Length: 428
Image: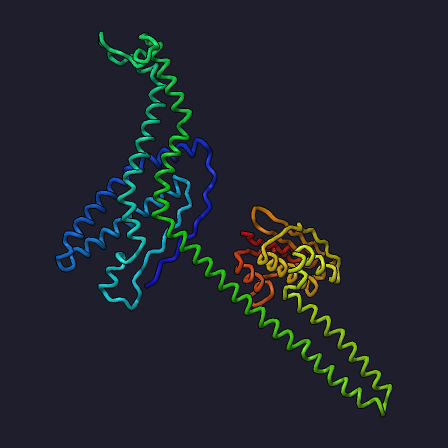
């Protein structure tokens, strides 16, 4: 059994107050127009389907058809939620028949789908909230328009000798001016409260629709994103380990082997040729310094104890102080989640490594700040530019690592420079 892919949720544009009132009114008023046929079709289909289950296959076919009809009504409601109610309503993942399913199993797929049952439930429940939303909307619009125009059409109302106006009933007098003033006041009050009333009516119906028609899709979407983030983290970790193993094998390991050979040769040369032995030892010392530098460079891919003990700001400043070019660091020293600090540290480490190797820059700037629940990391340099996120390279691995914590990476590096690496890491 497979599932359909979730359609992306596009951010909804901001709307003006007048536009919002019109859309809320249209959504609430038309809710009953959609909910009534949905209720009738589903009730009739469920009754006919369950009543004919004893007839071979007929009842199941009716229930399957009813399920597809409910999906259609639910699909229209999701479109209304997005376009009229201003709700980001994702489409759910309906079950689909797997290639190995038989005809009967494939035919009955909608009946084994949880979302189909939720669609049925919405068709039954939505009639109540739709009736409420439509009634409130009609009542408020009628009170607003009727009260504000009462001065015009009041003259056409036939009044008998025993006719009693609303103003007279509440003790404001029997004159027409008192009646017009009262009705106009009601119209003004209804107009002033119209945005709140229609918004409440629309929100009531939209809340039921969103819970039954969209909540499962949102949950599945979050699960899919979590799975993708976990896979990205695993890929990034595996890639980092392979890269570290390769670098150690090609660099420090080879130098240490050569160092051992040089020291062995120097020991043999001490008795016969002390000067040559001294030259060999000097070369071994040079190998030692170069090995230490390579190990220091490789250790940037591993979170240092300083990061754990004293936090991100101190660790980044310590890293910047060891660079070959001046690096200016602006960091907000505040407690951050460990996963966010580690991800941000690797961003800075990879960016500074690329700057040292490829950019030919004369200076770099690192900024760490918290903005709207996200840690924003920017690394700028004045180098030659041309940096790209290529598959299998350092920046690509960094993007995978950030995806593992739901972070993002942006690289702006035109030819000729400057280069900016920007990462965002959620703190929640």
